[in-house]
Image 1 (cartoon, rainbow, N blue to C red):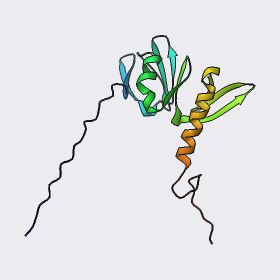
Image 2 (cartoon, rainbow, N blue to C red; image 1 turned 90 degrees about the horizontal axis):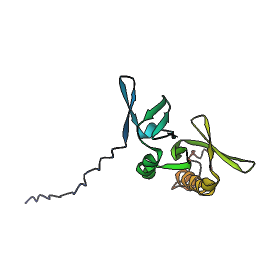
Image 3 (cartoon, helix red, strand yellow; image 1 turned 90 degrees about the vertical axis):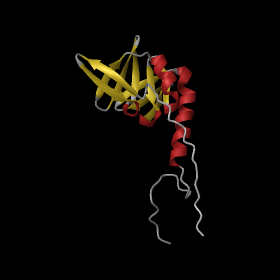
Image 4 (cartoon, rainbow, N blue to C red; image 1 turned 135 degrees about the horizontal axis):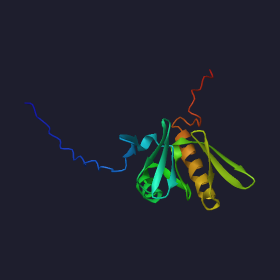
Length: 146
């Protein structure tokens, strides 16, 4: 005698994020900029300039609205005029008490108010990403024989 097992899996519908892709109009052309391509955003009044590997794109949304919408996607406000994708931060430097980040070749100033929390968050994120189940921290293969 054969038995048939039927399992029901409840799948939650994926919430649509209206800010995952933003339209950027230049003349008569509309380009669609994906959030995961954005390295950082810069305030321009009621607009934001999104910096990506392919260039910069002006979109009709405030930096404050982007900060709120993209917070859970790893974006952090570092200054009143800049929002940064933590995944794209290449370097954090502190010189003469001033903190800067290098993101996509650009050097961005971090406000004094945000420096401590940003440094802690970057170090936690990098440490968590680097830690591996096998106990090694750097992610490289252990080529020693023994």
